[in-house]
View 1 (cartoon, helix red, strand yellow):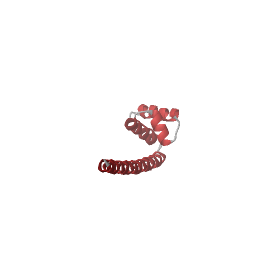
View 2 (cartoon, one colour):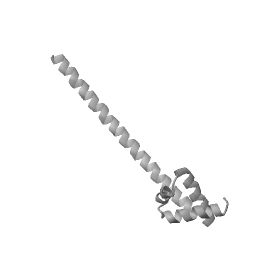
View 3 (cartoon, one colour):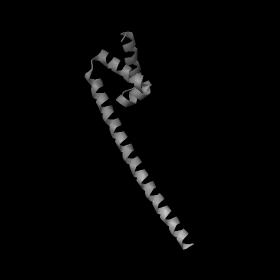
Length: 96
């Protein structure tokens, strides 16, 4: 029996090591994803600010197509939802 107990302890130690490594890997992956997301958001904000009024409307419409909702675009660009809605109406009005 001592041999079996030893094997069980070795397996528990191995599983604990695998769990710790997995958690560490997932934590690093999450941090990288969050950094990429923030980088993209900052880039999109700068891109939005660089456009003219009509360009901003088209850019907002493009973001809406990729993100799927006015709320997501508003949160991404740190703008209000009604402001995004107005931009989208303007883009449709201009036919672009």
